Image (cartoon, rainbow, N blue to C red; front, top):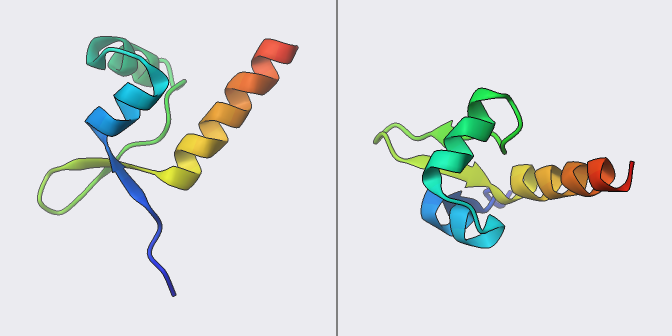
Length: 63
């Protein structure tokens, strides 16, 4: 079974064109993609979580 693609936070920030501070503000409001903390302390976002977040953003914009 293949492991899910995990993106580093700088990769996510570049893709969504957002600053780290803005991302963490959204995260505090429960509106950002889910972060996963690895055992080494690094943060990752799964590609599936980011894609689902993009989908939710599109649905909110269309509403």
